[in-house]
Image 1 (cartoon, one colour):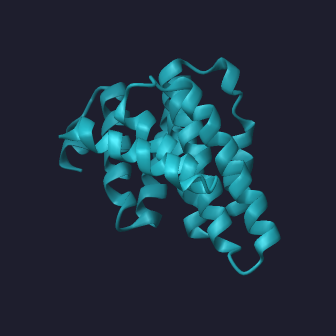
Image 2 (cartoon, helix red, strand yellow; image 1 turned 30 degrees about the vertical axis):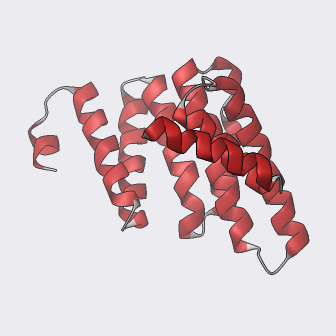
Image 3 (tube, one colour; image 1 turned 180 degrees about the vertical axis):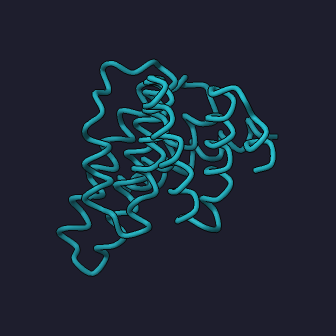
Length: 168
């Protein structure tokens, strides 16, 4: 936070704001959302569309955890994925996968609704897999998760074991 206060460069200060938000996600989601909101506002003020998209995606991912489900979905679905750079497109699909999964978990006692959101999460993950390098650990972990969610447990076991070999 001290570095952010000292920063005079707008781009650097946005990256620091993003980093602070990312640090808060694990233990104080509300604070993370505040930093993502500040970053989004500032990115829009200086017309930095790439960082504005990143802040929007970060907000959309974690807003459901604070109860802002419809707002999160609206923000996420407003973004035109066809205009995104490859790195932000990866973030876009990953954000959708996680956001829809969080939403599905809120409806665990309403299986039809939960399944609908889980299907959206799986669809986002299918799109994510298409933009990841197939030999990357991220691909293997996502493919393993995809197989688990698709109830293809033997395939999940095989690819996740392969991922473990990659890590060793």
